Image (cartoon, rainbow, N blue to C red; front, top):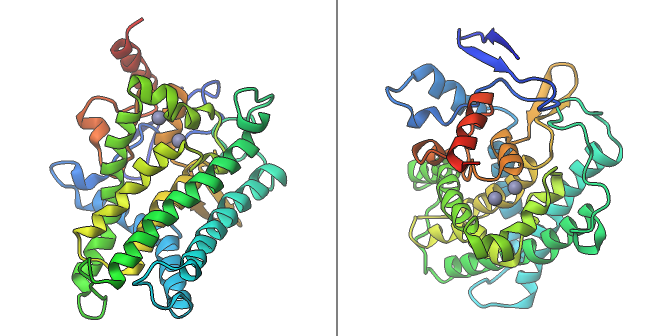
Length: 333
Ligand SMILES: [Zn+2]
Ligand SMILES: [Zn+2]
């Protein structure tokens, strides 16, 4: 293990090669908006990376704007449930999962275009696979993601678009309410992290873990298709985050963005790669090392770095050997 200093003078630890094939600088940090006293430089750089780079949030907002712009005409009247427009919404979500989970799998795992550069563990998926549906990790993950994940996600989206069309929810537009619109977009990731923590923590309780969440944890070594490979009950809990739009002023773009922050973000976060290298100096952040630690150590990191509930409730694992020792002490022999 070695220590070195970052450009802003903080000591970081490089983890021994035996534990991770690749790990980011440790300890991993949390959203500096929740660290007091506020440090303007940290808050600025965190949000610059979040909103002004080739980040998940920027990609998902572009997809939501593009998707709504292209489809609002073909979708037609959504005030009545009808197979036509529901089919289009389902097809769009199905295509998004196929594009990103399938695309990342093809790029990183089938073609191995990046080798094992920036990969957290050297192995590529699970061999054998007796515990997986169809006896294969990829086929298992594809089935649960597409058959259950896309269906439950689409059900929430269809319900909210119907509610929007019937003026059940308070609708805003960027033109008329730019600040509220931006605030809802800004808070989406924070809300997702808050909601995910509680739902996920509940799923780690005895029978719920055994009968429901263990399906997701079949994947110790995760891949892009593992992201939303969950039991249908977990999908119902996970995507219920979107129901916040029943009480928060919203717009279909914000609702679609929220859906991508759940479905597609999980796919990005489970690729097993920290970054996708795009040429010599450009890169796109992918992996959620915080959640990679959860897949290895289970009883830690139930939320994400966007809302530090794990820190507040003593379940945070920052990736360092000291955090691993603390986890061992907390769980006992
Ligand atoms: Zn996971
Ligand atoms: Zn879990």
